[in-house]
Amino acid sequence: MFVTFEGSEGVGKSTQLRLLKTYLEQTGQPAVYIREPGSTEISEQIRAVILDKANSAMEDMTEALLYAASRAQLVREVILPAIDEGKLIICDRYIDSSVAYQGYGRGLGAQTIKYINAYAIGNCMPDVTVFLDLPPKKNWRGDRQDDRIEQQSDEFFERVYKGYLAEIELSPSRFVCIKPEFDKNATSQKIISALRQRGAIR
Ligand code: TMP
Image (cartoon, rainbow, N blue to C red; front, side, top):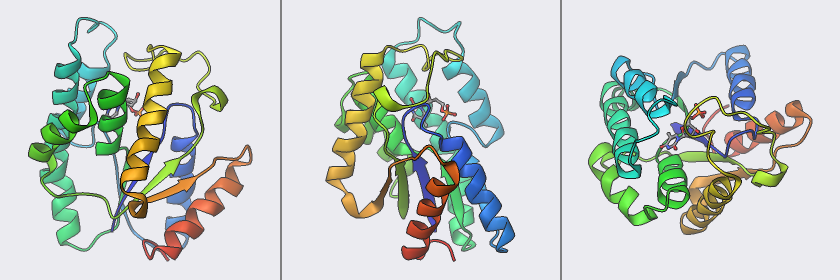
């Protein structure tokens, strides 16, 4: 099972991934935990280039191709071998982030991003994608500007959010949409029961 987590900044994704990991460990369910961009030596180097605030001259298309390049490495080095071995994979962001951020946020278009990523991932799509659904106005992003993406405007994050919703409408069966609550444990319970219902975890 290949499970991905998606959502805008400040929706509590890292916290939820941590709580899911705790649950899986406590119930004896091993998993491969990865994040995008990153999780291979080469992909982490690409991540550093993409997110470096000094790279303000980076073209949107360069950014999109770098995310895809990082993904191409991760798919071949980690994800496909793990799928072959029947492992559970939990991935923090994947292609939907590129469609939402570069396709809608940057305005490159969803089709362009899918076209580029077809080279990167082939048909390696997640079985289930958990989307933490919190509109930018209600999220907990605050004033964080730690990297090049976090520096973007409120309008950018509005487009990203709308992009996610548009993609979910196109393939509703792949997505589990969860509205994060202030109580992070309650949100975690919702995620766990949705993933259990899908047969992704026990
Ligand atoms: P993170 O903060 O969840 O680690 O993700 C790094 C940033 O990269 C985050 O702002 C979202 C962004 N991103 C994209 O713009 N496109 C992508 O394809 C991915 C995977 C992440």
